[in-house]
Amino acid sequence: MSNTSEASARAYIRRESLNIYNRLHSIEADIAFVNEVRTAYPTFPLIPNLRCGAWYTDPTIAHPTAHAYFKSTDGHHGNWSFNLRRPNLHLVPLAAAHGGLILVDSTRAGKRLPDALSKTAPIWCAVVNRALRLRQRGLAAPHAVIPAGADDDDDAANLHTPPGAVSPQEHVQIAARLDGWAAGLADSSYALPALVRLLRPLWITPASSRFPHISPDAPFLPVICVSASRAAEDQGGSDVTVGRGRRAGGFSYVQGSGDDHELWGQGLTPRLFWLHRVGLLACPRDGLEALVARLVANARDAEQSAGGGESDGAAWRTLPTPVSKVRGRVLLCAVADLPRDLLSRIPGASDTHLRGETAFVIVDESDAPPDDTDNRLPPEVLRSIDGAARPDEAPGESGNSSDVLRVHLAPGKRGQHVFMHDVLPRVISFIGPHLGLGKTICVAGGDAGIGVALVLLQLFFDDDGRMCDGAHGGGAISKSSVRTRLEWIIADRPHTNPPRAILKWVNNFLLSPHWRGR
Image (cartoon, rainbow, N blue to C red; front, top):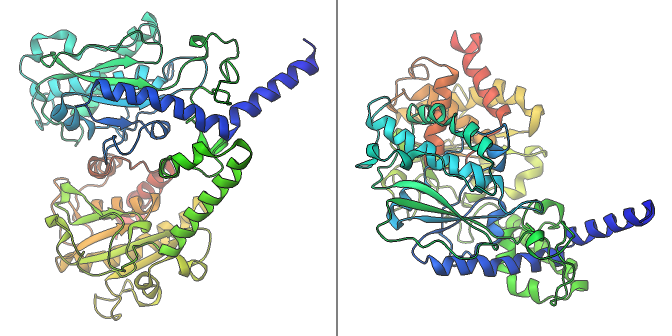
C-alpha cells in the first residue's frame, strides 16, 4: 500500500470512529449486553463508572443516585494508586445491603478491560478490606470493625486481578503497595462501614463464555466489573479502531464509543442521550447531526430560562448536601440547584439538617462580570450584590438580603488574587455572625465553592467537627487538617474533586503569615 493510500485509509478510519451515528448505534449494541448482565444479577445495584459508564446504564434500572469514580489513571502501569480523594466508600454500604454490585465501564480498542476495572477497582477492594482489618486491630482510629472470621482468611484481603489483563509481574508490584494505601485509608477521617463479608472483584466482558455463578452464601461480596464493549479481536476483524466495518444495521461498530464524548458528541451528554434515546436511534444518518444540535440547544435554553431553579420559584432542583461531620451546620450545592427565591428555611426538606434558618454564600465562577450574568442567577442572589452584609456589618444591617452573600470569581489563574484577597475575607466576615446566631451556612458553587467550604470548616470547626468561637478556634492549621476537611466533604458528596490549584489557594491563604498572625 502506498503512503497516500495508507494515509487515506487512516483518515477514513478516524472519520468513521468519530462519526456520531456510528458511536450512538455502537453504544446501543453494547447496552444490550449490559442489560443481559443486569438480568443475570437482578438484585445487585447497577452502577455506572463515570464518565464513560453512564452511556451504557439505563437510568430506569441503574441505581438512582450512586455513581462510581474509579479512574483508569490510578491503574496505569507504574502509576497505581488508591486515591483518598476518590475513595468510593459510598459504594460499600450498597454492596453490603444487596450482596454485591455491578460496575459498568468500557474501553477503546486495544484491550478488553479498562484499567479502571482491571486494576483500579481491584486495588480498591483489597485496600478497603485491609483498612477494615487495621481498624479492627486497633492500628488506626476505630471507626468500624473487620468482618468476623476475616483474620483467618488471608485470601479475603488479597489482591485479585484478571490474569489476561494484568501480568504476574505487575500484580506483584501492585500487591506490594497495598499495605501502605490501606494504612493511609485506615488513618484517615473516613468512616468504614462494617461488612459481614469482604469485597472481591469479578470480571465480565462480551468475550466471556459464561457469567460467574455466585452462590447466596458466597464468602465474599462480589464487585462485578463489566466492560460493555466488544474488542475488535473478538469480532474477527483486522481493523482495531472500527471493528469489522459496516454491520447489517448500517453502522460501523466502534469499541468504547462512550469514551471521550467531547470529541464526537457535539454537545450530547449521557443524560440527553437517555432522555431522547428512541428518537436519536431512529434518526437517519444524514439528519442526526441536526437533531443533536437541536436537542443540545433546547437543553441549553431550558437551563438558562430556569435561572438556576424550578418553575414554582421556591423549589430546589436538588436539595443541598449536609456535611455530616459538622452535624449539618454546613450545606453544599451547585448554583444551578438553587431556586429562584431563596428562603431562610428550605421548603419541603425532610432531613433535620435542612430545617433550620440558613444563610447562603453563592460563588459565581464565570468569565462574565456580575452585570452580564444577572439573567442567569436567582433574583435574591442578584440583590445580594449590593445588599449582602459587608465584612464590617452584622446580619440585618444591610436590609432583607443580609442572609445572602454573592461573590464573583473569574475562572482559572485570573481568579487567584481575588479569591485570596477579596472573596475569602468577605466570606469569613459574613459567615461568623450567622453561625453565631445558630444558622446553617449553605455554600453554592463549583470548585471555588468547595474551596470556600474548606476555609469555613477549618476556621469555624475543630478537628472533631464541633463549632468554635470565632474564626480562629479551629485548632492548628496545616495541609493535613485541610485534607481532613476535604475528606469530610467527600464522605457526603463523593463526586467532589476540586483541582489542585484550588487546594493550593486554600492552603496558601490559611497558612499565610498575614492570616495566621491576625
